[in-house]
Length: 141
Image 1 (cartoon, rainbow, N blue to C red):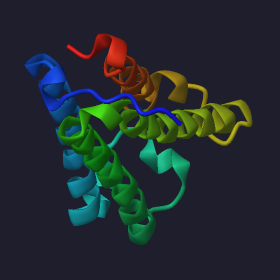
Image 2: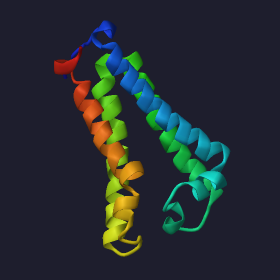
Image 3: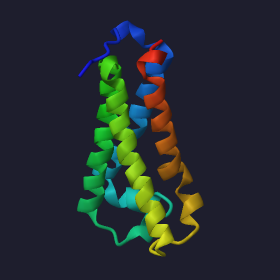
């Protein structure tokens, strides 16, 4: 297996800033979920439709979002591995979005979740895919 190496200087400041911002978004969400699971559950539109409040489950998911933050920070630190690191985050977010579509289609979530979930479920998938694409060696600068 061939590994393409991108020197640390191969990432532009803009790319590093975008990845850092992305990491901070997920870090903020994770810390909120871990520190105040009930506040997060009540504060995010539509979450209550997904089932009864369970503080352990919210914290479990908070750890998944902490992982997203760490993957994005790692992509800054190791730019040669940015595509698989950011891609792993995109995979989780994509599977999460598919689960929402599946639950909407099966009637387990109301149809209005398509719009309700746009900013917090569907848009992050698109952003993550874009970031993974942008971090590819052909677009290293």
